Length: 433
Image (cartoon, rainbow, N blue to C red; front, side, top):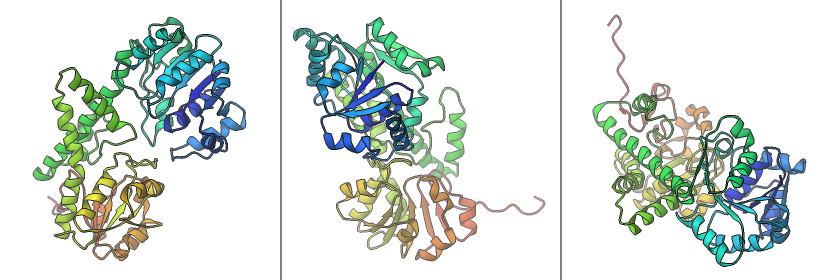
């Protein structure tokens, strides 16, 4: 079976590469010729762990090809994934492909869409006298580990009433189906709502642990141990239960906006989601207060920020709490010097020249009053902290991700503050006690 993927953004690039890596011939199409040429050369326009190598490998063996000819693409592919990052032109695209395809195509909607879109597209096709099978197929990919999420999904959601389409999709995802990944077949509306509801639930879970982390700091509890204990409960699970995390990502805000708008339109109040979003929004303010408290005031102070991406292994800054923290500190009069392994170009688009960027963590620390870990890049654990200490005006680290070894850093003479933990070093027990 020859597969088609339409889209040149995050979703189209990722989906086409990962499908080809299953061993299936894939054509990726978009009318942006420069984007197609760049990807065919293995130049991915964003950073995603392992993705560039997957693209190069599959282009090299001929399983993955790029094209700008939509009509030829529609005639060749037997099953087409519509995977643009925006649904703006989705209806026109569906109608054109259905008109050009030699037989009614199976069109799989991966693009994030409002609930009801699949049914609307089916009606539009009927009104235009065109035939195609629409499958609503939400994907659940986390920037930084999206390839892993694609290859090891928790479930496969198919919104369709066509048994032929279900059979075809099971063929496409045969390696996953054989591994025992559950396939849930439902209607369009349910499949579309799953994505928005899943995002909203994760936002609630993240906001909950961050609020409890505030309480932990007041009562000498350890939020890291607490989250571990909670996560080991099978009813709760550990993922996205780390204090200090924020709800970010390319589609997170739009997913929650769509869900809130759907609820408002239907007269339903989503009070829990509204509260969770408020907590998430206020996270940067709370951490800015932590910086202000240790420095007494931030005006005129030099703050070093390590990490600008919303999470490790991605250059996405969409919804990045670190970016929000930078903006808050600058608004309060601080001077910010920042370093991130891959996200600085994207950060510059949001921070408008208000930040001094450094080539490495040591340059960021040089002459700064405090060092703030904003993104949990693993490489920050292996920094030369003796050098960091010599570079800082004052040996203070605020670790918003609980990434570093608190005991070691305090033994080195750092004032180390984290999230959801007592910021006072525990006293050693007396010998023989």
